[in-house]
Length: 407
Image (tube, rainbow, N blue to C red; front, side, top):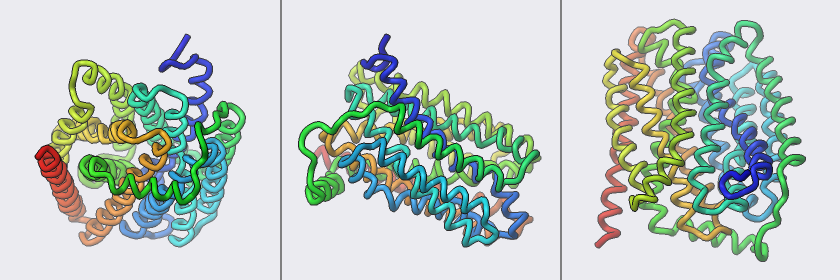
């Protein structure tokens, strides 16, 4: 039996460990949604301070590590790179568990951001090394589906855990599980040597510069990394609080809604790869699906900004499904460059996406802090309108650049 042209046993030995690693990376991003309010209550942090500590520090560290990670996974064994960095993430989780100040939280989350920086990139590089390139869209969608399952486990299950243990205990447990994931990655995943001669560091850096000088990269990437950054920024830190602050729902109902939205995202990623391949087989551009969907995402964000408090869960589901197509950019970009550059292509794109995520979380926190508690809904409205404007500018960039490229 085969999966994506490989024996099923080999495919599982690749997808299992690396999928589990990305599962943990997505879990810890979404975990902030659920522990944000308990941490605020205990430490007395405002929205901007908690946003910087739990969100911006993680995504900023994560983003800044993307370029070094791209060089490392293209040069060395991605299994070893990822496993060693996971140990640093475990240290950061322990620091979080014993932090009593915003500075300690920031340091812990930054260490976790560095430690998980290779979680997705090493996985996608491994898949590019083992699987046929025409299967990368499906493999990448499977990876994101597993990641969203991790995000789901950080919703309602964490709410249940918080009823029986402290948020610090959760971070200690997470540290142990992260060390286990590193061990599984090194012992279960098969090793494949890099094809061809290993490039010098100078050659690798020139390859990275070549990615950033590529016209096609800059035509497609800005719209998609802005969409990805806004999606991650909102879902990782502000989705739960939007339901409690704007829709005025009790915490259990808000947690249930976040859980439902996340589960729909799992289904969405399960279908994205096959749908994209089906459209391509019928002669359509691989950009058709993400471009059309991102236009719909702008409309959905406009509805959320207008705060039409009718069918709010379907609104968030539609936004999540449409904006999630930005992840198709990974496979589309990878197919436009040689295999030896794939790791750097992924990280060049990821750097921009996660820097956008960090800026989005800082921006939303700053806007919310400028409004009193009684007017917090208006703060969300202003923040969301600003994000919608950014998406529209990015879409305009893509349209203009595409037209110029055809002239």
